Image (tube, rainbow, N blue to C red; front, side, top):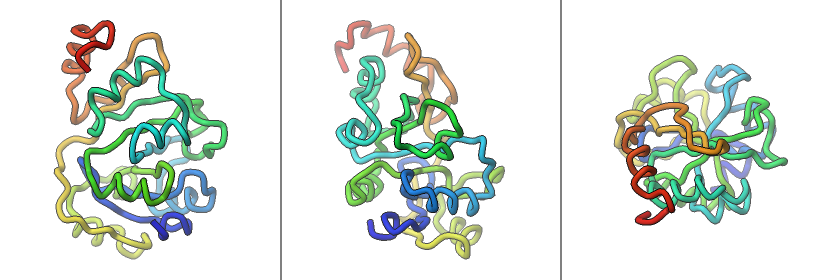
Length: 198
């Protein structure tokens, strides 16, 4: 999408809430994203991608454990914390060696990622510390004079944000429970110890 590739800030709907999309490899765009949200620099920014191949190309090959979860839950509201690629900006990872990424179950969001040819950011479309929203009208009201483009696809599904799971450890660890219950993930992992049934 030309707006994102030009370094602009775009709001778009995902399979949970509206998010703010910029090119995570563009330093000026990431700086604008933090400015739009009033976000602290010590908070990492999650990414979304068109598919696992795009993640493999631009982020890195998923570990066996992460791939099992991806095969079962993607596209969907499960963010996997994986090793960050060397070229990813420090501001995106908040200086950590990892980054959160997922493939959303929202056709337009995936199409935007595909059009950009790389993963994009998907931090919630709100001012930092304020509630996230599924309503594009609320995004326009709060951020309309701060962002460059609002891709209005109607109301997003809403509900909690994505569940975030650490996959760089020997066994997956919950970081934030969200749309996918942690107990469900644990039960699935325990029932498929060798990755069968994914």
